Length: 186
Image 1 (cartoon, rainbow, N blue to C red):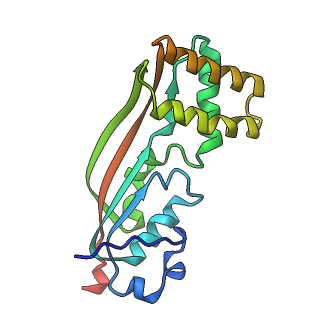
Image 2 (cartoon, rainbow, N blue to C red):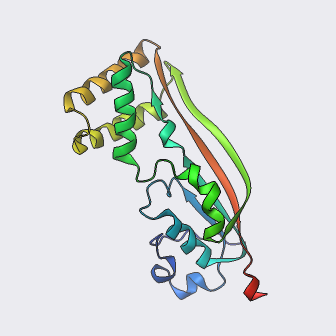
């Protein structure tokens, strides 16, 4: 068994991959937090089906970023920053909600799923604190919120960690799908 990781334009894999890459089609396609950033998620899913072999599996791992939440002592700041983080970071923050109803139109059938809430509370925060530090500059650059509010929000998050009052969470989903059998190819 050989494992190859191949990079290509997710919207047009047939064009961006070589014939050698496509010879037998892929057995497994993995999309890790890809669809929430894709301009056209259905095109990405159809493109993956085109290069997948018969019976191939698709693993989609992505967040329901509409539910992303950071705690903040000022409720209005917290809500506005949550919304700004989502808007500045993701093209389709709600894609996972729509994927379940639409994946079959893209050549795949859901076989299994798993959900995990990624939450950090109190003094133990690494994932969400690094998320905040990484993506807050996008909020500032977008102009969605005043830069002073964003800077103060970051300071408040660090203080919340120091004081054991930090809270952040988001639900993440893993969907396992199988390539649909084309009735015309039987």
